[in-house]
Length: 443
Image 1: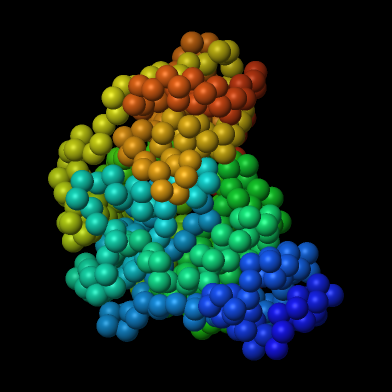
Image 2: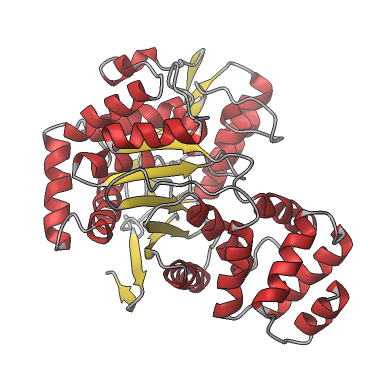
C-alpha cells in the first residue's frame, strides 16, 4: 500500500477502505508517512469530503491510536457531554453535578481553552486545590463514589488527533466537517462512556457559524457514535451572544455556583435542563423528557445539584468552601466599568468579539504554554433586548490593571455591541435536536 495512491484516489473522489484509512492514520502517528503527504491527503479530504462509512472508520482508527479509558469497573450507564465551544459556556460546571444528583452517572474528560472560547479545565483549575489531571484509576474511583468526575484529557488519549490537528492548523484544513467530527468523536469514544450528548453551537461566536454547517456536523457525529455502538444525541444551540453574563474562569465558576443555588441566568438554566434531559433519557434514568426536566428543576430548587458540585470539588482535592464563599476564588486587582457611548436598545452582541476581548484582557492564552490569570474576566450588564442609557455600564472588566491590555480589550468589547432605537427579541437559544431518528426542529 502506498500513501501516494491513497492521495490520488481521494483527490479523484474515491472512497477509502477501512484498511487504507488504518494505514494512513497508523503510518502518520508512527512517522512512516511524512507531513507533506499527510497534508496532501487532508487537503483532498477537505475538498472531496468523506462518506459516512469513511468517517466512522477514520474515527475508530484514531481511537485505536492510543489509550482508551476502561469504565467497565463502573456499574450503570455512563454518559458524557461535549460542547463545540462558546463564549461564557460554563454549562458543564452546572450540568454534570445536576445530572449526577438526578440519578445519572457522568464520566467526563474535557479540554482547555481553544481559540476565542474558554476551556472547562481552565475554569475548574481556578478552584483552589482542584485537581483535573487525574490518573485513570482515580477518575474511575471518583465516578464510582459520587457518580461524577471531570478530568483533563491525557496526552496518551487519541495521539492521532493531536498530530493531525496540528497539521490541519498549519494547512488550512481545520474547517472540514468529516475531520472536525472524527476529531471530536474519537476523543469521546476513547473516553469510554456508553452515551454522549453533544452541544453543537451555531452563530457568530461558534466555530460553525452557519446553521446548515452545524446541522451537518451534528448529524455526522451522531452517525459516527451510533455506528460505534453508542447512544448519541446532538442539540444545536445558539452562540450569537455569550451564554449567561460571566466570561472568564473564576467568574464563570461563580456564575455556575449561583445557577445551582437557583440564581442563575435563564438561558443557562434552560440549556442545562434541555441537555440534562437528553443525558438522563439516554442513560435510562427516566422515561420522558418532561420527567427529566422536572427532576433537574427540583434539584436546582433543593440545591442537591449544588451539594453534588461540592462533593465533586472535594473528591478532586479542591476547597469545597468556595460553594458558600466564592470570595475564596481568585479575585481581580481592579474592576473597571465599561460604559455605553449611546442610548437605545441592545440589538446585537458579537459573542466572538466579547470572547476575544476577554482573551486580550488576560483571561486566555496567546500561546498554548502561556499561563492564564483565573481572576480576569468580563461580567455583562446588558444583553440583547435590554435598554441602555448613554454612560450606563455595559459590563464590568475584572482586570490585573495592565493598561496595555485594558484599552484594546475595551475597544474590541465596545465594537461587539450594536445599539439601536428599537427593542428586539433575544436570539433563539435552541435550533434542533439530532438523533438516530433524524432531526427535530426546536422552536
